[in-house]
Image (cartoon, rainbow, N blue to C red; front, top):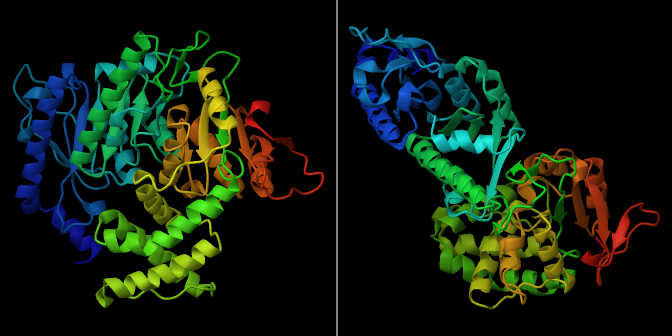
Length: 505
């Protein structure tokens, strides 16, 4: 069926009266009753919308069901819902009800919902007036972001884990809902990883791939906001890993100081900075190389290994097109497990030998090392001055992050299993090559935007690699070069401050 034919089919009267549309209307009625009991849509406030899921219709062409505006959300029924086309045209409006009901009106949130649909390919969007989503934006009237880390419920937010820092943009409220449209769109564009936008003194917009995803994330966001409010009442800092006492000089939302003395962030490299290069080259790499075949054989049918194999296939195809030495074709899955593993091992040995900084290799290595750390076959190594410095920075309110070519999983393992114990409580987050190559300036621009600092120079980046230092400096970061035993030589007159220990910072 042509695109025009598909659009005509889903807008036909028969389709509008069909089971899929009715089921989605019924679903929204049910969810609104649930959200009313949670305090998210009381006083006729708040709203919800979802696409009509139909596997025969491309998501971009699916119809949109939207709750009306200014009605008692807990009393809505299927007949109260609006039906919109994929571009926002109203295809069905509910019939008026007798007094004291108001004339029907589509949700005032409609233009904001459409931004989430078009800019994020959402399957459903929830607008909540939940008390916690309103109060959390008032903890600091100047903050442009909400930040929190090391909370279990962060795992319920798409693309986030327990150790990650969750960042939610905050936009200013307006007298009319529709006037928020452009500022919400700007926040969505500025924060490509976010699945929510807070509106100060108002509430929150949350979206997901489906109604289940949107609902799950909305519940997690509200939990985290309530946790932050309660921690604030206890005088504790929800934005740091240990959730220790708030600094007396701080009045902030998620660690963003409003005083003139902005606390800085420190971003650390691993190899040659926190950890001897020899540990990576003489311990981790050989372990991965030695155990890659065993790992693939034992975990071949698991979801995470199949995901690793998909990434490696894409990388090898690209390598073959560019004539990369040691690249060999990987046969299709139909060739059998052993044939696929043999080809993978051949490619991986070449990648490891060349120490290639590519996501497909680093992700698989992280999974191999995970097994090694859990079996106590590996132990993370850091320089003696690292634990004390991390603890000191943490106590003074300085946020510390890691940026390494190793996967985020590998980074967490290294700092989680050291001779000094688990050092992850002193770290606020981890960056790997998914944000970009470490020798490219745009990677550091991405990091500075993710950290939400007032200016890039509020970040100190410490590395042992000259090219990384140059790239970070070009992005506006302050840079120091780590000079450790076993590190490579630096160019003469390189122009950067060098340190031999973190105690010099």
